[in-house]
Each structure stands twice: as structure tokens, then as C-alpha cells.
Image (spheres, rainbow over the protein chains, first blue to last red):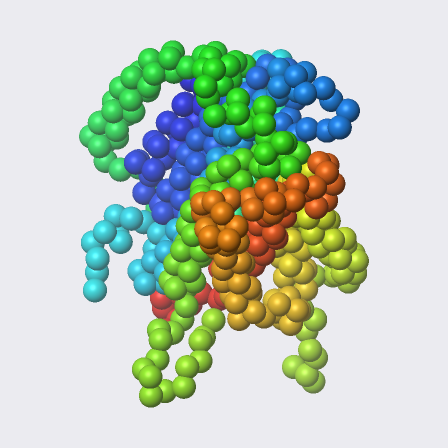
Length: 115
Length: 187
Length: 158
């Protein structure tokens, strides 16, 4: 059921990308889609009542192995979040240039490609 | 409790719907920041402190970038959707994708049981069992990120580099001058 | 005359004073998270974004001239490249024949494993954390300053 909720968040973002006319709304929907995917990947690696994957001196080795959450999805998501910021910065730069050129954020007007 | 995760996801869905449907752009940007904070709380709940530090700063930077760079006083906005037929086709397609994707999630184990316990030869079992001995790092996420999977980190550095260079190249005011003129990069 | 008065830049004096005191702590905290990345939560990415936040705080509270005095945009671009190059050099040194092994091996830990849970026990992980933090911090500060602190001309102002 939690995976279905995560998928619904992704669908809300996808609806925004496909349907909205304002360029800022499209950028906002891309951010929502990226957040949904990050949450989903970390959710796959969660163990119920687990502990964080950081060892300390006071813990037994096999107790740690039996109760830790998966460290691999966390490593993948860590890079994905920083890349998401880079992509957002690039799309905002494109949006700024488009506004400077056409005077509007409406993609129907921009699509006409007035000289 | 797993109900806390369900409530958080429901909050995020409501904030996302508010963000894309509201007429005011400032409210939309703030709602996206609310979605981001829901994501951060979800990361803390799922025992991932390394991952949770990064979006806190990223959300603040995205908020300031979106507000300062795009919203102006007296901005003419065309809030609206596309034509009706396109809207119906899009909704139907999204509904079909949703139904098909739900079937896929039945293959995954339930929330709370990580995939690595169902497969005895998963790489995560090796990382957890031998991580401290082989790399010497107590933080297993850093050990995975910088020793076992360092190639992915190199790829991430490359992609970040390329996207930042792309953003800079788009936003520069002047193009490169000809070789005869002195080069003054105009930020 | 009124036009001779120089308008003070940035926010009110209370915000400026508190930010001047706090940014040093934020910078030191970020460096701590980077250096102890293999023992406590954090690492190169978390520490790098916190260091970027210290500079962004100075940009937001005092105007862009103060921040650009301490880290000019050219220097930020150069340190970005230096960070990426350092990471690549560390990776390529694992490929060289004398240290044995493939691209990206942790040659320091294989040659001389220190005691676990100490600062020098990670091998190349410590150097890689510093390179990644340098890269991420300067990249985020650079893109933030360029996108926020420039003034975009409107279409009818040309």
C-alpha cells in the first residue's frame, strides 16, 4: 500500500508535466517526480524497526547484521538528490532565457516560435 | 509504525496536488518545499541520516532560486490546462499506467522487509558483513559510495559538472569573443 | 542632497551581525562532517552542501559583493575543477602497476589498515570525501550566485 501511495505521488507529478501550460508549473512537477522516485528507492531498503547502517564499537557484529537497514539504496539516492538540484538549476536557467526572449511563460505562445 | 509513513505520503500527495493546481505561483513554490520537507521526514523515519542532510539544503536553494529568478511583480501568467480532448486522453493513459504498475509492486516484498533478506547472494549482504574489515570505514553508506561503488560517484561528479556548466553557459550574457579581442568573461 | 546618501546593502544590522557570527560555525561544522564522513553520518555530499550553505548565507544577508570578495566566481570555478580532478587522480592511482589492482581500489587500506573507528582508518575514503566536498560546495555556490544574483532584462527594456 505504501508503494502505491508513492506511485500516486509520481503520477501527480507526471500529470503536471503533461497537462499544465505554465513553464514554472512544469518545473515544479519535475521536482515532485524526482522526490517521489527518491522516496521509493529508500523505501525498498527499509527494515521494520531497524537501525541506521553505521557501526559503533559497542555493538555485537551479528546483532548489527540482523537489524540494520540496507545501505545500498541510500548510497544511490544520495547522488540522485544532488543531480536533481543540477537538473533543476539548468531548467530554471532555460526558463529565464525563454522569458527574456518571448516575454511569457506560456508554452503555447513559445511553441509558435515567433521570430 | 507503518501508519506514520502512510500519513506522510498522504501529506505529500495533498501538497503536490496543491502545488500544481493553485493559481498563485508563490503558493505553488512553497507547496513544493512542503513536499520536500515531507521527503526529509520520511528519510529520517527510514533510518537514513546521511541521505536526509542533503535535501534540507537543496530545498532551501531550490526555493530561493525559484522565487528570485522567476517570479516578478506583474508577471503575466497563463494558468490553465491544455484542450479538453488532450486532457481526457492524458488522464486515461495515466490511469492505465497506474493499474499496470500496481501489479508490478506485488512482486516486491512488503514494506518493512528489505529485498536483501529474500536473496542470500545480494551484494548488500556482503557489504554489511565485510564492510568494516575490507574498507576500514564504520559508516557503511560512505563505504558503499566511495569504495564499493566509487564508479557511480565518479559518474555523479561528471553529471553535476556537466549540468552546472550547462546552466552557466545558458545564463552568460555574452558569447565568447573572437580571438583578436581580449577575453573578458561577463558573468 | 538625498542622492548622495549611500544606501546600505543587505538586510538589517541584527541579521547581518548574527549571520557574521554564525557563518564561521557553519563552515567548521561542515568541515567536521566531511572529515569524519567514514565514522559518523554525513560524508562528502552532506558536508559539501553545508559548506555551500555558509557562503549562500553570506550572499543572502549581506549582498553579493561581500560573498564575492571572499570567494570570487573565477576561484569557485577553478576549485570545482580541482575537486573533480583530485577525485580522478585518486582513482587512477589505483590503476598504476606499483600499487596493484584495478581502477578505484582502496590502496591505502590494503597496504596499511589502521585501527577501525579512528580518523585515519579509511584509506582513500578520506581523500575522496574531501574532493567530493570541494566539488559539490563550489558547484552549488556558483550556480546559486549566477541564477539569483543576476538581473534578467525584460523583453521591453531592450
